[in-house]
Length: 181
Image 1 (spheres, rainbow, N blue to C red):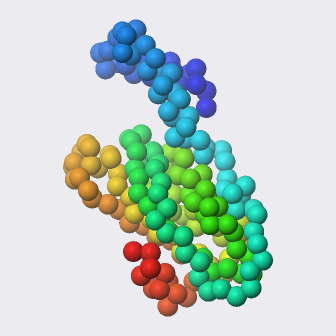
Image 2 (image 1 turned 180 degrees about the horizontal axis):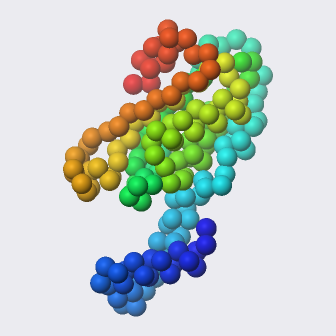
Image 3 (image 1 turned 180 degrees about the vertical axis):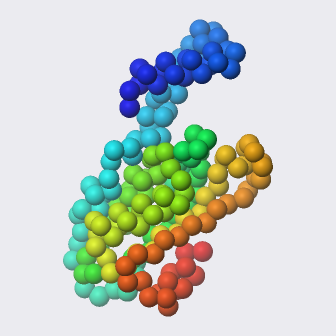
């Protein structure tokens, strides 16, 4: 991220809304906002490969589910946050990954300008690509501040998306979704 350009853009934005960027309370705002976006968008240009590359041999096993993984992301339409929880279920094919790596995969994919639907797809695709399970199911529930703080202002409304990939039989899908919810 080009922080200098981001800081100048924030300064111009403050001027555009009628503020004085040189007043005491706003002097450091361009830097703080640039730092904030650098952190919130730290997944730009990264893949989850580094998080999912170390696997372990594990014979047997049916479904591995990591649920209630909290995340926050940025809506690409309004540059406002959305946040919620995600669950990852996969059917291992002789290899498993450390459970914290699934949460880190979510973090990498969420730290970008996003759509919830794309975020869910990216997590599922990353797990299929780098972990190579028999199948994967990713479930995501999120609250979008672009819906709760502006526009229709529907506090507490949530959006649910899920993606399955590979060989994830219907009975296993139903079992995983029952556990996830």
